[in-house]
Amino acid sequence: MLVALDQAIGSLTRNDFQDCFAD
View: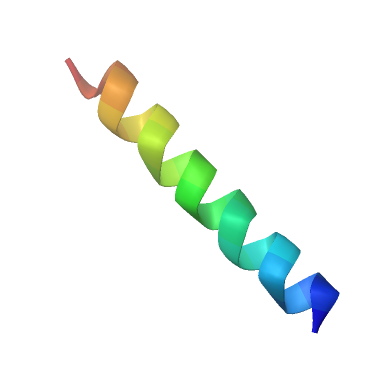
């Protein structure tokens, strides 16, 4: 369960970085 939660947070963080650097 913790692994899945960590992966979910990791992908959310990755999406945030992509949005930040999209411009």
